[in-house]
Image (cartoon, rainbow, N blue to C red):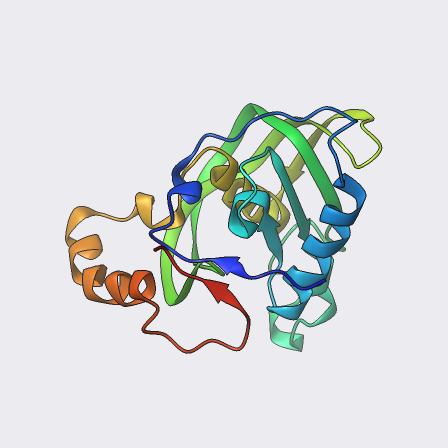
Length: 192
């Protein structure tokens, strides 16, 4: 089932999310719904708070970036062929490499894209959808997507990395999103 994406201004996007246990009710369906919702909205990642569930869960698929690259973009990222996975109860162990800029966007903050600097590499401890524990290092565009989604389960948004002046310049657009004064081609739910 395609779920509505929670819009900027909703309190759930600012919560530090709770860990979950294997007996979390409806988890398999929730994960399946998150995949369907993410692909329906042309996303490469989706965190549970974005569908109004304040739990430490996100899904991401950087493989689709490599599958749709133009010829002149090939070789741009070191992590080909990408990674597709479910991350439960994730915690960052280590950040490595220099920070690099990438023009990020977010399904909860539509039609706003800004350059954000993030580390080249992240080592995470997480559980997959079967609650098998992994410690794994990711780099390139995969690391970037993971760090963006990880921020969601920590109550952070990509706009938090912007300088105060840039945030001030975006205030009207952000207010419009909060009020629902925006047209997108996927379902959204706005703060009351």
